Each structure stands twice: as structure tokens, then as C-alpha cells.
Amino acid sequence: MNSFTFYNPTQLVFGKDSIEKLPQMIAQFTEGKKILMTYGGGSMKKSGLHDRIMNLLTDFEVTEFGGIEPNPRLETVKRAVQVVKENDIDFILAVGGGSVIDGTKLISAASTSDHDPWDIVTRKAIPESAVPFGTILTISATGSEMNAGSVITNWETNEKLGWGSPLVFPKFSLLNPEILYTLPENQTVNGIVDSMSHLLEQYFNEAENSAIGDAMIAGVMKQIMAAGKVALKEPQNYEARETLMLGATVALNGFMRMGYNGDWATHNLEHAVSAVHDIAHGAGLAILFPAWMKYVSEKQPARFAQFAEDVFDADSSLSEEEKIQTGIKGIEDYWTSIGAPSRLSDFNISEEDFETFAEKTLFNGPFGNFCKLDREDVLAIYQLAQ
Ligand code: NZQ
Ligand code: ZN
Image 1 (tube, rainbow, N blue to C red):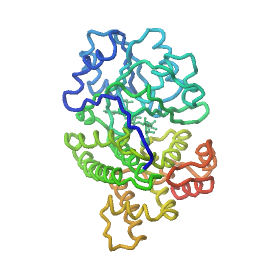
Image 2: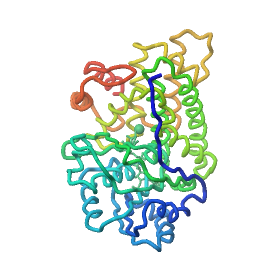
Image 3: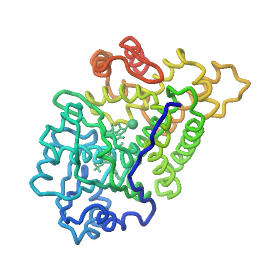
Image 4: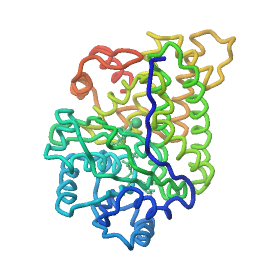
């Protein structure tokens, strides 16, 4: 393994009574009363969560900022930064999924700075402070509720870029699995695919030895797969939602990457697609990960054979090639069985775009920590996903 320091200051408050702890959680981080509540397209109003939160915040002065879109956009963040500055906000409460939380991370960092928010995303400006914020998570998928990463789309330039700073770990995240009951089926599917993809990115890592990580990743992956089936059949199954919610959080809060970074090429491949076509992140990953696995398994077969043993209990008597196929087909069949898309053509995305995607993925040169991909590799993977 590489040497590492693990740091994660987010207070994770989990369970049926978690949301009711909101006032006391905020009070830990500010004596001020001015709260900005950020949210998305309104699912939290429909579900009754909005009223529930407002009833808990009667001692605070709440300004609302709704309309943060899935794949959150720079222009929306800029409008919110204005609101924070004009209203002298003390604390931000993000209510939503990865998109609202990622948008809020940039709002939080950009609101204490004179820089354009995009300069923070492109690392031209390094944030030196941030408005404190907490989250109420409404969809389990990205792990953004307990990490310091954020992904923002600049729709003017068709760029979707990740950035991060230790300053934007949420101060706390409140997770009540019951909140997931109202998720549309396709969002539950996207969340399952995204959290499994985070585990895959980290399983295929650059370390010589990642025995502890391998065991944790395989264990969490199996539990997410089993719970995913149950939650899709019975959306109000508490235990299944509980497993999915905690599973997605630990999949990307640093626990699974102690001693290595993981590959992360497929996330780069996906962000290039959703920067141009605005498809859901989970949907893009469901299409691209099997294609990446097929392509890279030819270059690095041993790790893929081990993957099949760890996650799909492939019999040790199988040949290396049989094991590899067991692992890739295991992922592909599972995602198909839960209704995830499998081809770029499902979204009318054609070969014409592949050069554009490739250019976007390669803006920093060849990428992927487990297997470096160049232009030729990237085009071949998009072709396999076609
Ligand atoms: O906007 P509303 O009306 O709330 O509806 C949302 C949205 O349409 C809906 N939804 C959320 N909770 C709901 C609900 N509908 C009914 N009931 C509920 N309880 O779900 C839709 C999708 O929400 P979104 O926040 O976009 O989903 P997700 O959590 O998958 O976030 C995706 C974004 O996160 C980025 C992705 O690239 C994408 O932009 N990622 C962030 C990461 C991070 N910060 O660590 C890592 C990931 O790999 C990823 O790149
Ligand atoms: Zn992801």
C-alpha cells in the first residue's frame, strides 16, 4: 500500500430519528441564525420533508434556494453565491442528493471568496475558507454526504469537472433511510450502480497489496447487490434501504481507499458523456463500466480473475479466462436485471460524439491509476459501449 493519512471530520447521524436532531447539530457549528436551505427540483416539497424541516427550524431565519439541477450547473451556483453574500448567511443546509450537495460545496467555498466559482473548480483558485454546511440526504448514491469532493457542470463550455477541498466536508449529514421510500425506481437503480461503481473504481487500484480494502469492497458490494434487489421489489423495505444508504456512504467516504487511490478512469469517461448529453451519472456508469472491464481485463487479467473470486465466488478450479468472464458478466447481468441501461445508443448517443468525449477525458493527458488510457484506448472503450 501507499502511505496514507485518513481524515474525515463529517459527523454521520443515521437512523429514523436523525432528521429531528437538526437544530442541535446546527448549533454545534454556528451561533448565528441565518440559514440558507438549498435543494433541487422539489421532490422534498412533494414528500413532506420540506414542512418537516421548516418545523424544526422555527428558531432560525431560513432563506430558500431551490432549483439545483441534477448534474448541478455553474450558473446556478453563481446565483446562490449572490444570495449567501447578500443575506449574510451563517450556515447552509443542503437537502438532496449528490447534485444538491456538490452544488452546495461550491456555494460554500465560493461565498467567502472573490474568485469566480469556476476558478475554484479548475484549481486556478484554492479556497481558504468556506461557509459551514450540513446535509440531509435524500438519495443514496454518490457518498457526497461524507466526502470532500464535488462535480460541477459548466454548460456553456460543456465541461463537467470534479474538484475538492478539505474545507468542504459537510459538518454533519443526517441519514434517514425512510426518506428513500419516495425515490423513483430509476433513481434507486442509478444509486445502486453509482455506489457499486465507486467500489469497482477502488477495487481496481494501483497498490501491490490491498487485502483489507479488497475484503471490505467485496463485502459491501455483495450487500448492496442483495439489498438493491429487495428495495426495488419493496421500495418501503427499511432494512434494504438502510443497507443501500450506509453502503453508498462508506463506498466513497475514504474507508475503501486506504493505501491507494483506485482507478477512476470510468468516472472520467462518464463525466465527458454527461457534460454533453446531461444523462444521469449512474446511467452512464452502467453503460461504461462493463465496457472498461472488457477492455482492461485483456491488459491486466490477474486482477479481474481475483475480482470474480472475491465478489462472485468464482470457483478456483475455473481457468483465468473463465473467471474473468464470470466477474464481468456478473456485473453486467446484475445491472441489466435491475433495469439499468447498457448501451450508449439507449440514449441516442452515436459514434459522432466519441472524438469530443475523448478530447474531454484527455484534457490532462492519459488517465487511470490502475490502467493508463490514451486516446486509442478511450475510443475503443466508447466503441464497446456503443
Ligand atoms: O431535484 P429533486 O426534485 O429533489 O429530484 C431528485 C433528482 O431529480 C431526485 N430525488 C432525490 N431524492 C429524492 C428524489 N426523488 C424522490 N424522492 C427522493 N427522496 O433524484 C434525482 C437525482 O438526484 P441527484 O442529486 O442528481 O442524484 P445523485 O445523488 O446520483 O447525484 C448525481 C450527481 O453527483 C455527482 C454526479 O456526477 C452527478 O452530478 N457525483 C458526485 C460525487 C461526489 N461528490 O463524491 C461522486 C460521484 O461519482 C458523482 O460524480
Ligand atoms: Zn460516481
